Length: 123
Image 1: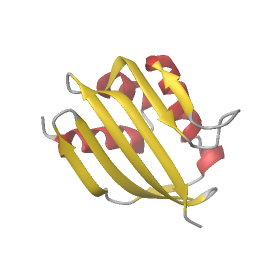
Image 2: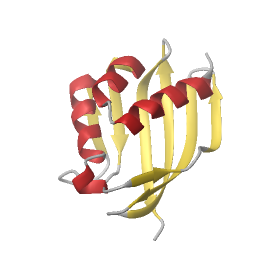
Image 3: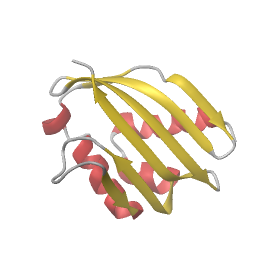
Image 4: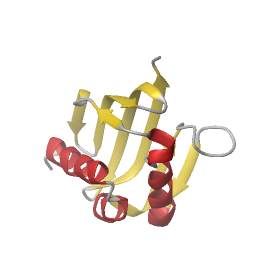
């Protein structure tokens, strides 16, 4: 598996806001997304399981009402080996400011099985 190519393809879906196809093409059907992005009720970590829940969560996380305009850095500290990919990104949102995200993907059969995303507000 070409880990950097998989990451690039995944991010292209994000930039197009094509969450349905992103999840269908890059996540296992029973995938789990864990994160701390503050657009959900209750306390983090937030957990979304399966395609439908993850698609709905991605739509909330990237909703222009929540984020506004978003820019994303090139990946920092990228590690891709075996069944895992880990990286950091600097995400700048016109609504929520600058964040450092630290993400880890555990893969199964070439798709994301478990996705850990942790955002740290920088300003």
